[in-house]
Figure 1 (cartoon, one colour):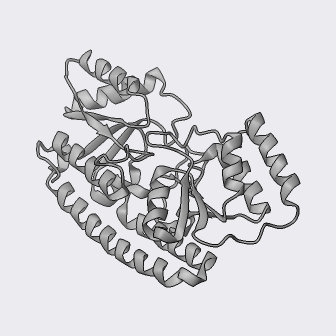
Figure 2 (tube, rainbow, N blue to C red):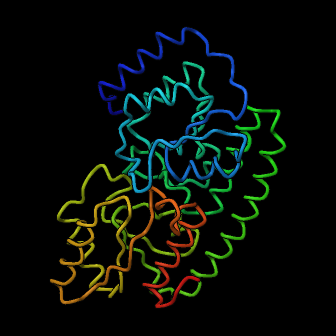
Figure 3 (cartoon, rainbow, N blue to C red):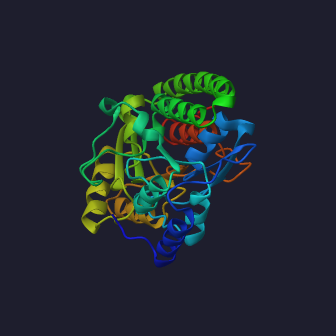
Length: 312
């Protein structure tokens, strides 16, 4: 595991010195919770509602693979009743902080841990464990919603019925969203269901909705693509005449631009079909500011580029 920045280590030490063996008496009013990514924060907000006071560490467009916790982050985490993360090593540079918070009595919840292991995709290129991008299969994200529901109900029994009610409504919304994605995917001819992206974040999407996915980088963005990877993928695009490739909101576009140039050198012009949201939501107020909005935006972009129609 990557070592913490010096300031964060100082903050962890200070938290330990100030907290002793236990934690303060829980505050009245909404319970304080922290979420790591925008995607997890959106989930907690939907189920927690007015009964939680939520802070998100990462903003729109932030890459959680590369995020390093600051001293201020550590203080925010240490003052919370619970910390919700995505898990499966997505926030790879925060492992030591999570462990320290758990030792100090902060409830730590990795929502992907609630997904049955049989439904996870193993990734040899990502620490030899599982691909963490589970939210791209909407049916799997429903398990994450149940995880948040149960954690909040356990932390705050007084409002357990409210958490369960909001979760029930949201699970119904997710079931309808999953059906919509399947309908949109079916409109793309099978031979054109090839999704080429900057990094390999869409394997769950591909498995659930019948696509083949090719990522220029691996599951994590921590390592850049090698020249040989660019050339190999360019050859495949030119040979199969794949009409479009996609940039990602949290990954620099230079990788995909280099890929397009390599394809052009082979006598085939491939379009950049648009920008997909991969590891983070979009800006507040935008079409991808929520998880359902992000899913709809991605699907509309993919179907629009590969099938020549809008996702709707």
